[in-house]
Image 1 (cartoon, one colour):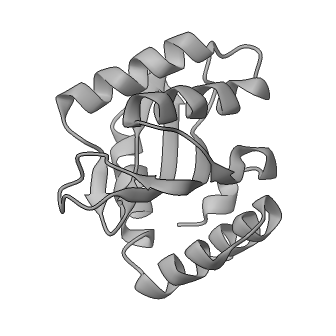
Image 2 (tube, rainbow, N blue to C red):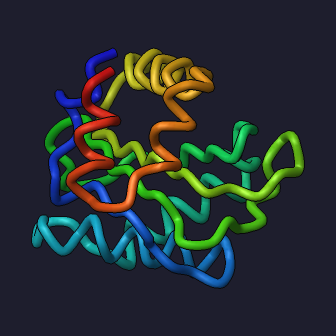
Length: 149
């Protein structure tokens, strides 16, 4: 999948901080909605937390892919974050998470977003890519590496 079709430089952040899974999702919601005034940070946070209550989106290897449907979201949108410090995320392998790809889809989206979610997860199964992402030290470098796939 070409992640550049759903990512933009303003939605890629190297060194995001958070002290817990909940606070990290809150920070992610705020970061994403800063560039989109039609999206509500509190609503995005609530939806991401509701999805996490169904089961952790931590897929292993230090990766989490929180996702949700959202009102006022006009198309599939991604955001990518490299954390300053790995966090416990209740991942399936019980390892802390340091790379988070957030996927937002319109409220009325059909199940096609599940295919996108599967492709994003497949992208993050590439251990060479994970090494490159973890070596990044700036937002721009992180964006360049993740969109080069």
